[in-house]
Image 1 (cartoon, rainbow, N blue to C red):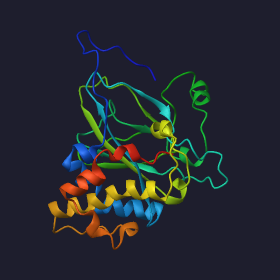
Image 2: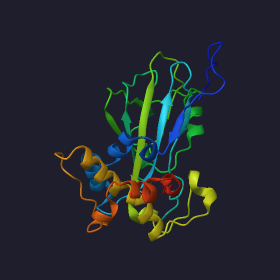
Image 3: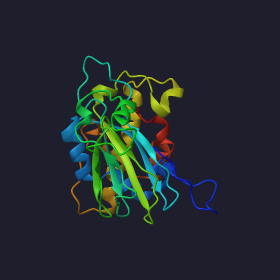
Length: 255
């Protein structure tokens, strides 16, 4: 993607990505336990669904850089069990309205066609990065989008006057994660996603469910099947914040 030059006097460095919303933002932890979002994750990935990671994307007006067209998944492209959902999906919760000038763009249906040759797609488009069939995810504040991690997506530099902040977090099928070697941001750890690693990272969901219930006691409570019977061990308390939430993002399940 092209990177336009910022105006004279623009800062040399800007915030564009933040991690660990469940640790740094109480509202982020409560969002993670949203019963309807978790119910949708269960419907897509099964009752034993597991988390991926979370990240907050910041596109400041006139400063937010572009993110080139890409697909998120890296682990399963050559798997005999490959299908359109094997790399999971991401939610994005928008704190502000998103516009044509700052939003994420996706190519619907591209998640079903395997690994894309994006350079060839751009070349076939006469070198233009404005790929045919791309759709902008224009949203109101508070809207939530759901994007398959295999879908070709990207965003152009924010040359508009509008701020975009997107709270992004995803979920996987447990079967797609179990036994896999750490990938993407976790690759340097050389970890293998065994039962214990999956349990430890998934515990954040259960603590988030209770954090939300404490804040919204009249709202329905999601029942997370892998922690059935363990709810009392993962209440939202200062002890579980230290035991489960602190540095939880170092245990992300990236594939």
